[in-house]
Length: 109
Image (cartoon, rainbow, N blue to C red; front, side):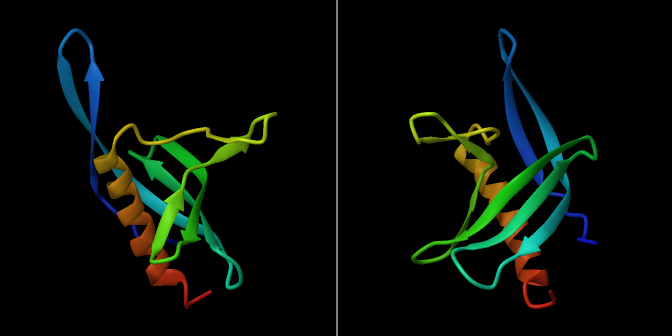
């Protein structure tokens, strides 16, 4: 089982004024690891032990690994994210947590 990671995610909510709340990444599970090809892993991330996002992919880029959020193909052949962070700092926090867990387990499986 993946170690529980506590990383602060700052989300801005607009209700007439800015209200900032925080969510924690409480679990990162590397569900599938591929040795061959550019897609290296499929991951699930749980937030506050209450909400999970499945099918986040770890992709090998030209210079480094990055994550791709779950998506579906539209009728015109374009891919649209099903769920995604709303800002760069949140994406970076999620990516950091996922890649840290991937590095721990990639050689074990």
